[in-house]
Amino acid sequence: MEETTAEQARIRVALIFGGQSPEHGVSCLTAASVLKAVDQERFDVVAVGITREGRWTQVPLDVVADYSVINGRVPEVAGGEYDAVWMVGASGCEVASRNGAELLDIRGVDVAFALLHGPYGEDGTIQGLFEMMGIRYVGSGVAASAIGMDKHHMKVAFEAAGLPVWPYVVATAQQWLDHPDRVLAEVSALQYPVFVKPSRGGSSLGITRVTDPAQLPAAIAAAQAHDPKVIIEQGFVGARELECAVLANPQVDGGCDASVVGEVRVLAKDGFYDFEAKYIADDQAALDIPADISHELSREIQIVAKRAFNAVGAEGLARVDVFAAADGGVWINEINTMPGFTEISMYPKLVQHSGMTYPDLVGRLIELALLRPVGLR
Ligand SMILES: Nc1ncnc2c1ncn2[C@@H]1O[C@H](COP(=O)(O)OP(=O)(O)O)[C@@H](O)[C@H]1O
Ligand SMILES: [Mg+2]
Image (cartoon, rainbow, N blue to C red):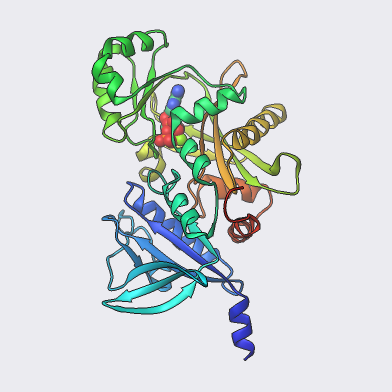
């Protein structure tokens, strides 16, 4: 009997990972990290993987815990036998495994924790699904996720909040097709190098550093392979890339705390923090936590990070990335509402340096999700 009581008291958490974005494998590694860290006496975990093709499947916990990089290859969600079926019935949201016509292992879900990065995960789409299902979930809601995913809209939100944004130009597919001359004229007001990026991208995919206007069309085409809307930004030369983790805290003014500041040092000459430096080569970038910067600069970045969090209406967690120019100016690069979240990623490491362990962070994010009302808020 006692066991049943303990079982009922556990909070039922669905981890969702994998997905159709290029960050599928990284997401699986995150799932393994989170699963190993989550307190299973408090939380009853069900693991739901999304295959690269988009199939939802229930994955046994021991399979998730074993996800790792083997011979340089990232793990992936295998199709498996069982589909994951989500239902909203009289007793709320439930998830089950389906084997043919049979539903097995039906259980309720209290909190969804989507460990997905990029489009269809970090951009408000899955958050909308959770809203429709009436369940609580970790992290930002629909609007904040969508704004935080889109480099164009996040800049508009930052500018409206009076935050420092570096010069940029936006080109939709239609504008580039109909009026390339106008786009090029706008870009000519920027100083080179410029960075051409997909507006809703991630992991540096589709980004080109352009030093000569003649390279622009090819760079725009490369960005458009990820998103028809492209953003062209004036490049920083000699600026430092600094990052700050923001964690919601309903107890304090402003509703969030900022971590110590970390630095990404790109080691390759003329290089930037591209996909290779982020995930593949371990000799191309160094992470310094905390960053070797003055107390004043660190304070300023923490304030900017908290304001950026609130400017997009973020919830739960976000990582805010800034450039610190040689003259001391701080400019926001971007906010990530679902930042890299393996145990060795920047966000958890920053939080850890500020005094919270990875397992406590995982538990705290679930608690924060439970504190929020369902529905409009
Ligand atoms: N305006 C810029 N000036 C200099 N470097 C930049 C600029 N924009 C981006 N970068 C470099 O490219 C990397 C990826 O750009 P970012 O906007 O953060 O895209 P993503 O969302 O893919 O991380 C940055 O970490 C930085 O190294
Ligand atoms: Mg970035």
